[in-house]
Amino acid sequence: MAVAAAGLMATTVAAPPALGAKSGTCSPFTVATAGQTYRGDQKRTVPAADIGSRIQVRGKYVRFTVQSSTFTVRDYTLTGADSPRPDKDLPLDAPTVVFESKVPQHGAVLNSAMDLELDDDGLVFERNGGGQDMKIQAKNCAQGGLFQMEPEPAPRTPTGWAPTSVTPAPGRKVASASPTAPSARTRARSWPPG
Image (cartoon, rainbow, N blue to C red; front, side, top):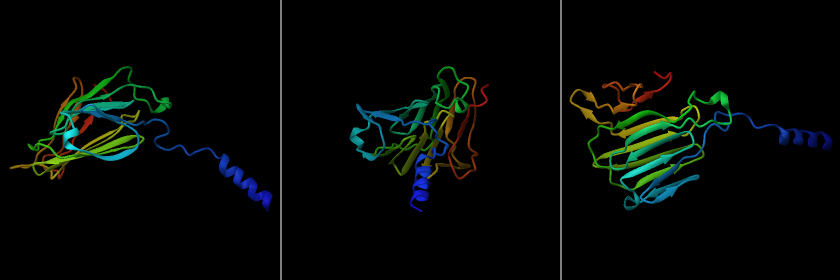
């Protein structure tokens, strides 16, 4: 019985790890603002006085800049870096700007402290001001990652929900959110190119 149990334990310990969605194709972001750099797994509140006018988000596969007072995002770029899994790489040979800007149409000035969460493949940051709360979530993955901008409450116009204004990079197509949807989110479509 002891021999059988030892064999089972050895089999369990020696079993290869399951290949999950990340499997080496995602990596952490580095966030920099006002001379401070944040990296590694952490959850913190950055005081308003320690937030500069811009927040630089840099990763192996994705990078972009955020205007801290509105959460306008500029130059969302896929870097074209190769991952350990070539089957997960996008067909890029150089950095490619997916969208030049994504501007939430809330009209408020975000001036609070900022909640920042970094982990092994992404980030979440949130800030508020003027009755508006904004959250950005992003993943830094070879497949293009994920980008999500969430206003709460979603801005309204006399005709419905105000969409986020998106300026695509030259040659890119962008689908914007429906003006009647209960969200001001938009998604940038970058694949296939053209």
